[in-house]
Amino acid sequence: MTTTVNGLDEIKELSGKDLGQTDWREITQDRVNTFADATDDHQWIHVDEARAKDGPFGGTIAHGYLTLSLLIPLFGELLDVRGVTMSLNYGLEKVRFPSPVRVGDKIRLIGKVESVSEVAGNGVQMVLDFTIEIEGSDKPACVARAVYRHYA
Image (cartoon, rainbow, N blue to C red):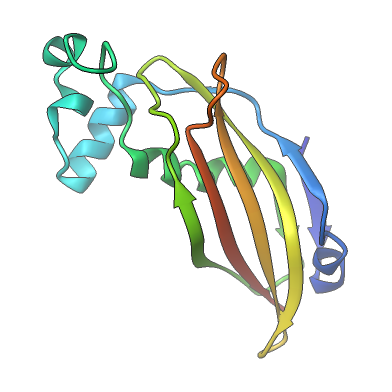
């Protein structure tokens, strides 16, 4: 379920709030190939299905940065920010990839607002803890602490 906030005051109220989880999303070979083309990263573990069958994961896996990039659309399923003039992805404080995402796996995002603080220019900064889970796995695909800024 998407949380909707309107304006900086409502964003401030999110501090410490669990945003829940998204629906599961399947990672396809087509998505991995498209990402490989976009980034010029055609390492065999991602795109060579025949060779990867005999590799360490028994098939192709998503790029770690593909998994990380999916934070953007998945986060949009958790939080809808309205009543601001601009929102920025300010960066990441920490990212880890504890487990690979195999093609065919389903992933989802779990999000929590760690803190919200005021920043210069009539804005707020949100620090969020994200976990991308893999369906049926005890280890997450990605854990990240992200920083977003919103301005009135």
